[in-house]
Length: 255
Length: 255
Image 1: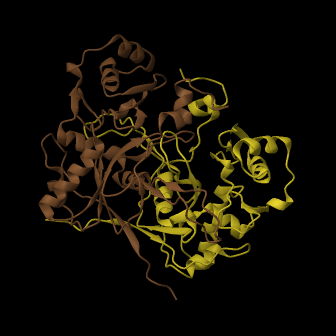
Image 2 (image 1 turned 180 degrees about the horizontal axis):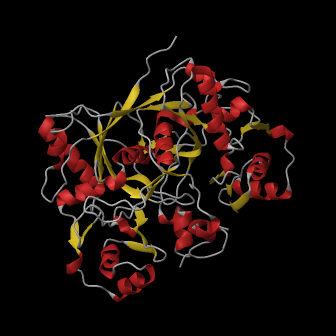
């Protein structure tokens, strides 16, 4: 006999307008979807940044020698590369694409600087403090609706070994990034080998799937019925334990 | 006025027994959940392998010099390392963990060989042909129920730069791995920069989230209401375009 199992519901917020600087994103969301306590709102970082004005006009950017040199190799606009360098805390790779760490600890291609879905001449930066961004949305939803939601700020990133990009979390509030099973045992009483699951990235990936085509149509997704978990927020490797980073910066071959 | 938006439902299949060799996994699933045409069944590769007998007894494994040497460095059972080497098409890294490519093109830690949720002395291998495994489940569901479902076989993998593991797809049927936006334009008419989305991994990640604790309790998840997409199946980089692989095998520093 079949039981009626519990489901998680993942829903794109319909009908959001093109977001512009100064827009009250939480208010726009609440006008379009009913939220409940515990719901997880996933927001494309580009849309949060547009609402908050974390953008730059290429025509205002003075190009350094380094940006000019890199742009010459990659074939990109030197002003765009300068925006990427300005957003980077540490550049790990210049070619075939700039790969760098931004101040929150996230490592991404072109420092997450984006030219999609904005007017010519504008680039969108990642929110400078994505954790504060997630908290900000959460607080505003509480203020407007009284609901205690959880929030993930997403970005789209490539991976090693596999083609194609997937959604990743760069900021979160109301949850931990990692679900921590350390010390737990399996069904046979063995201590588990897989002990830390980056659940915030798994949820960000699903949200990105629903957002679809470069976040053009649906930049906000709500996950309903999602259980809570215990864990921690140490999502980013420390530089000295990060094998790939060490290889990129020449501190070890891994052999 | 709020519209009732379309949702995707993600549901763990409740009450599956511990899977043993010879079990009819599709039959066990169909006895526990109603499936509809287009539903995506996500199955932990370990459970598919157990049903199909893709396991080895450590006591049957003769250890090579190489396995013995690696195990001495990693502190693992030399017989386990031998099973990993036997499952590997190309070893990319031996220490601090074995990272290798298996025959389907997937690159993973310890070649995906697993010791969780099995009796002592048994290791679970990845299905040797995960694409065929997905097709096999799909065909059997059709045979038993008449339903045309889609299938993803999942594994749990680490990532570069970020701590924690996430669900990844190693086999799929009824869909393409990549959603391909190449040539599409954004809302302002610009050609999109993010053009290939590894949707099969985003869905596998969400399934892995629902599976939870080392797949012990819920090894099968159904995604309902998921739209279709167009794309291709070239999920794995070719070796000559894979920056990290080149670094690991000493064919380029990336600088």
